[in-house]
Image 1 (tube, rainbow, N blue to C red):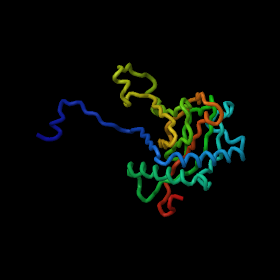
Image 2: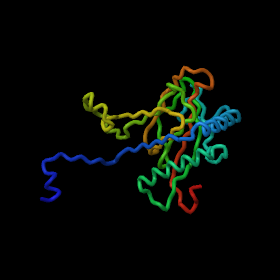
Image 3: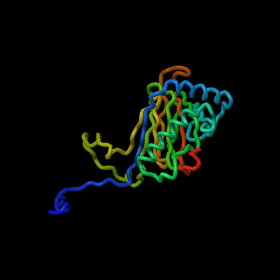
Image 4: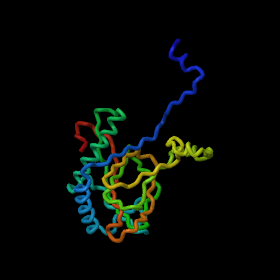
Length: 222
């Protein structure tokens, strides 16, 4: 009997076009985050207005310039992010003549009620976020099923089925300090409002976002 004969009459399942999200919790995050907060506070003093992107400035959100990957005080995070991204590229068996490199990087500071609107990151292949400070209830990042057609009619799903990721139309990640999250740049995402009850600087959600590209290995990813 051939291998194909063993499958006769058996329902088969194969997965195609997966949406991949990777994350990693750094083991040296406390001293790293202390240095990053100092660097971000310095930038806020220099540029109190900041940029307006997906952040809602009316709620007090602040967005830095997007050149943090070229500033020495953020070098340790750049190294950690590129190492993590290279692990993703290796896992997906991307062309080994190219390495992961950060195209741009910026900080987000979100006080109470601040959030980020739904958006994508065009012009790059992967994007990500690193959490520097994230008090309880400071707002999760969530990703939406990119298949627009799948939202036209949603099936009724059992309680047990709702526990299976294959049936989800949204997925949420807690903003844990020291965590790097990597996702395809085309994946629609949004950040919930910061509802932390802590006052002052302790209640801020502080994150650093970045975009990733492939660079020829001869350049060293720089």
